[in-house]
Image (cartoon, rainbow, N blue to C red; front, side):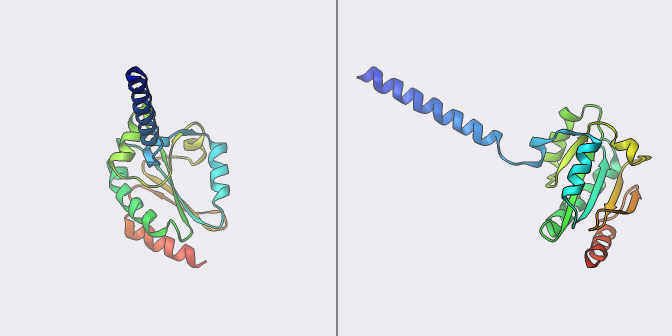
Length: 164
């Protein structure tokens, strides 16, 4: 009898531990689910965001202007995520799967971030980091920013595009 109770307690404890680990591993932090995305997959993501203003941010963790720009994107995402704006980050890091998730978590990045899985840099003629491609609500590219842009500049641009 005592042995049965002991086993029952052990099984319950193991179950609770497993449940706890599962819960922590499935929390939806932006950095937890980073994956590589190909150009064709990105096109599908962009297509699914038609009727929204989209900022496609091409960046790298080792890039000082990129790191400077990210807090502005976090703020803009908080402000506009429910108002027809999507921000998508594409990170370019040699060891991306190792460094980007921790970077995303550390910097509180709250919008979707992917790693370039091939073809994206070439398709957008990436010359420098950061580069931001702005899409209007019709899905067409309306602007391309190369280099650091302030949060206010993006905010003003988003405001104008949402009026259209």
